[in-house]
Image (cartoon, rainbow, N blue to C red; front, side):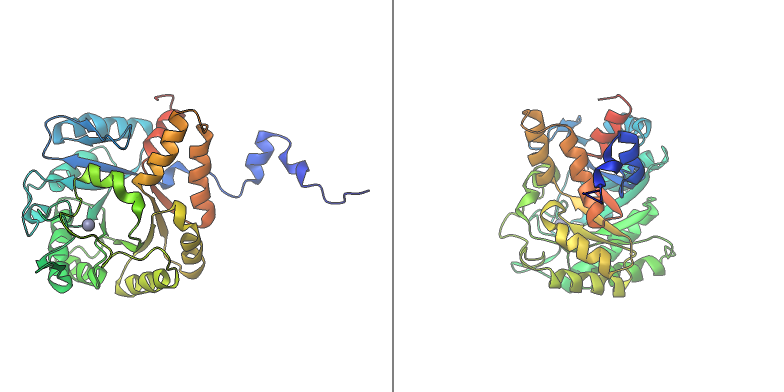
Length: 322
Ligand SMILES: [Zn+2]
């Protein structure tokens, strides 16, 4: 009888569809980005990212309770210091904002991944030490090593360098090992593109460069072979987890990386992705289901874990706390 093949047979009920689904929205795999800001007195909603708040050390206590309650297992932590200087010294201060925030999260059993960069900490907003108007690569990676050790001493579970300096992963690995942190993994922002989708994040992290842009160290959007080269280099230098950032416009890069490399692969759905989708949902142009479809598409592309500002919303919805 024609047609001989009836794919619709396996789509007749939700249970059956779930049974044969190739990917599931696995809550263990979602990582919530989190900003802790020393320059504010109480938590503040980020204008361009509705529902996302910069926390203070005080407000982090109750926010961490909420994250625990709704079942968030991992966060990617960013700090914004009160004082910025040319060398971003607050990034490795013992009483720095990230160093103080880590124990609050760890106390709740939340896995803490610390972003490691200097743009939130330097008064010029670039990701490293300047030499004239250029970012001085080799000096900067020495600083990255120092920051990694400081974050580990404060209890960070994973170090995630995002500055895109050459040799940063190797320099960090060496620094960690020499301070007895050989068991702290590195999640490398390996293929981080100079994307226009970061705009809202820079509001949140107060890290817009005071001059120029980051195109001399972040990747050029047209390139995918170069992304594979960057990832390969990071793995050679000791990256444990590799990353593609952003996610939505870079699904092909996620796919290619997942096929080519055996390291766990993270994708970072950046602030502009969140903003586009959330605004469409909030205005009623798209349904809430769009968010789940977006998340699952990143896993289908090949990511093993997803850093997304939607993590909290999805988990809270699940628990009826939204
Ligand atoms: Zn940076």
